[in-house]
Length: 393
Picture 1 (cartoon, one colour):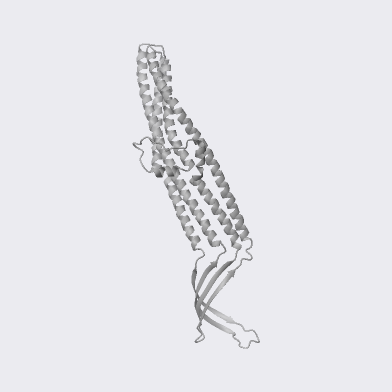
Picture 2 (cartoon, rainbow, N blue to C red):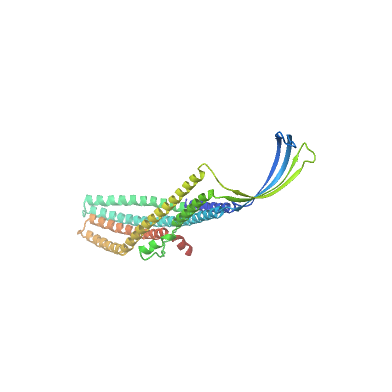
């Protein structure tokens, strides 16, 4: 899907290159060959000394050359507008490329996350199965009650259901990975070395101006301004060089073939267009305001996104050590609770609770590890530096 969007952006870029060529060739030399075949009737007013009244058929051909000598800025402004549009489309390709990279990282990490969760669920199921075996043994000798056994059986059944659920989530994640990358998600390795991010959020915000989508909006604003300037130039004169060379022959008159040649400069001054130029200028001015507002809104949204992602990333990294210590403590606690449960100082419920606590901590650890990777790449994307990181690898 994202590869298709990237291909679409690349085609839009090619279209922008074609539009630039159109702008460069718009005011070039035009050569036309005009053929004529017709009937002419001449009525001579009374009093003319040599009357030419009569009807005649004729045919002829004429070669016409037209070249704009001076466009009063139309040519240069049109090219500038096309260049700005081309630059905007180039940034759109960069933006789509960065988005494709980010989506790839997200589906990659999602597969790793679901696989890690599945491993935990399978381990939890195995532990619950062992707990169920021990609970049944103790129940037979009267060490625990029926209620205690039922709790373990319920937990084990839930453990089986959890494995099935996570297996389904893993298959969905693998399918999404295949849709985005076109590859099969197998033997994926953990992302060991993360790209470097700025030391503080202020530095991250300072790099925002290089974001391709923001630069695209800025180029679109400049293109709209050039287009507005071009609309005002529509009322300027146009100086043309006209050249004609032709031949004409009257069919009924022998030896009536004639040739004509002419070269002239033509100054075309617009006088009235029934409000068309006023409408064009209004539309172009609206496009300028719209492009300006789009750039401002996009910048504000990116600033907010950077601040949010940076705060989330800081929280994850600050909690990493605490979470690691919590997992170790929960592991030790579970071991001691199992020993105390064997001698009757702890109940089955205490053991199940400790196991669930440890599992919750391990799950949070898995989620944090993968969320950190995604947030790093997401922050780089919001800063506009994701393509640079990808190109450096």
